[in-house]
Image 1 (cartoon, rainbow, N blue to C red):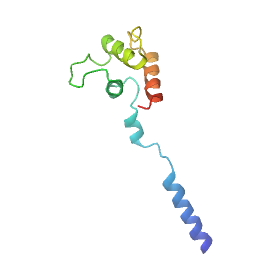
Image 2 (image 1 turned 180 degrees about the vertical axis):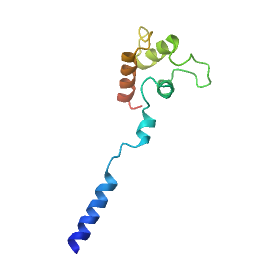
Image 3 (image 1 turned 180 degrees about the horizontal axis):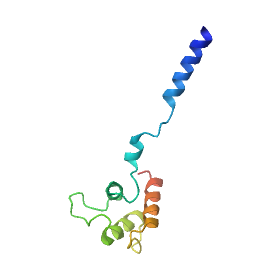
Image 4 (image 1 turned 60 degrees about the vertical axis):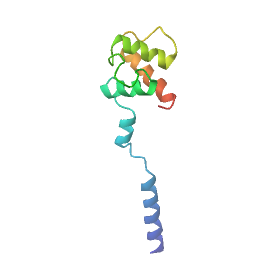
Length: 97
């Protein structure tokens, strides 16, 4: 009986510690290239002024501004390609965003 109680208690502890990959993870890191992703990058990198006065997400102007804010160089980001999006996403995640 004591062994059963100990095993049940241990199983409960393990279940409580288990990482489930919940939707909060998806909210923190939206699908790359989605509107939610552009909004996340915009906020994380500080691309726009927060009052809607910045360039439209995904435009060449916005991507150049994001490239500058994320990488600190002016050349790049003109085409917002999937490879560019991956590199921006990776850089922001490494930076802890």
